[in-house]
Image (spheres, rainbow, N blue to C red):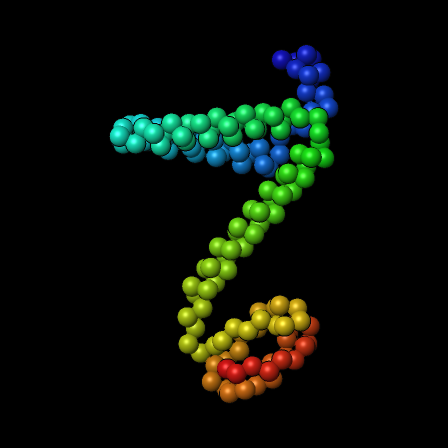
Length: 141
Ligand SMILES: [Zn+2]
């Protein structure tokens, strides 16, 4: 380590969010593999596959860490961050959908800025004014 290691790492990409994710996934696979090996010995094929995937993740992680192609690794990390954001958004929307069993209000999406607008139910056809962009749209409540 020390000076030689620093010289080796000079100009190399290093660690980012995606590497943390890869490492964490590999670790999670290792735990699942351990559980299978201990309690579900008949599923050894599955544990072999998980082992292989974990190994590939770790190798990928090392390849990225020592890569000198910074912009490529950066783009990959950005892709990962975007995928993660839309994944989280999906679950957030899903949770909101689950809670929307609101009997007295209805949720509309503003056609011009896609702001969500909560409107009391049972008022018939009304003009709704978006609180954010002030656009008006007609909806049946
Ligand atoms: Zn709007």
